[in-house]
Image (cartoon, rainbow, N blue to C red; front, side, top):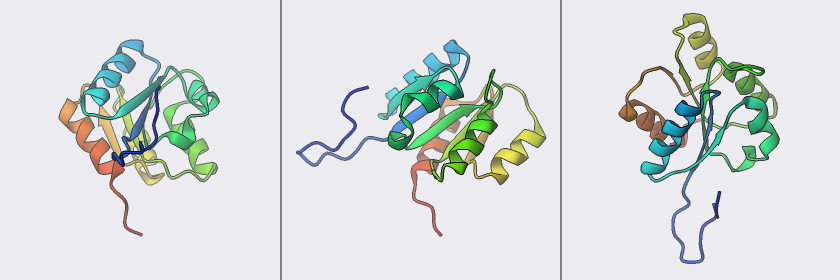
Length: 135
C-alpha cells in the first residue's frame, strides 16, 4: 500500500479510501477512479477481509456495497460504529432499497448511491465525507 504518512518535506497527507465490494470488477473500477482523483485506495472483497486487514485505523473514508455475502455493508457500518470509529461511510448498491437507505443514513452514512452512479457523484461524496463535520 505504500507510505501513508506525511513526508519530512511537509507534503499534505493523502487520504486513504477503503472500498469493500464483493464484485471484483466494481472493486477494480472504484480503485482506479479513487486513485485517479489523487487518493490512496485499499480494496477488500468482504467486510470480514477489511476487518481482518488492520486497516481501519488508517482509513479516512469507506465506500461500502450494501449487499455482500457474510457481513453486509450495513452490518459493517454497525460494527465500525460499535467500535467507536467515526470513519465516514458512503454506500453503493445495485439494489434500490428504501429501508436500507433510511437505515444507512440514520446510522450516519454520508451518502447512499445507486449503481450505476456517475464518477462525479462518488468523488463528490468522498470529498464531502472527508470534510470535517460541525458538532
